[in-house]
Length: 192
Image (cartoon, rainbow, N blue to C red; front, top):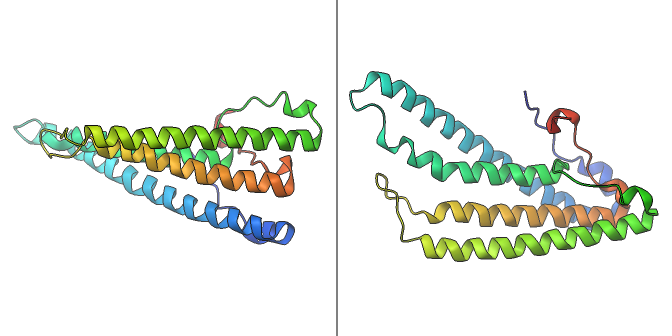
């Protein structure tokens, strides 16, 4: 069973880092709460829709709800992107750290900050392109509910924004506290 880790303890970090860490804590709390809410709402909706459709297949002569395929297609990207942002916040993404262990503390700090800058730039480009694609596909609608195909791309764009904010918060912590500020995921959360 996946355990949801608590939000970062901002009192401890405020005592050692000042204003920049206060900004990082505000970002983490806002992104964490938003992503958890999105995961909770979309997860419950996905479970309810799919369960109701399975029951309806056996009860209704029509063989289920016609909309039951369309809604999960629109909700799943929101569910996934919120999870991606939370994984960034908790250090749950795959990383190769063999070079970091060979660098001095300041060298590791510089390398981490450079990596964070690349991540922020990459997700900014991806988010911008997702908005462009959302505009292009906005005329496509689902046959039963008439939902625009652009909703999935907006999920990608907002997920990119959440990753950017979370990575910025991590970069602030690394800049102020050093490489030790990088989160270490619980083994239960990573499958290691």
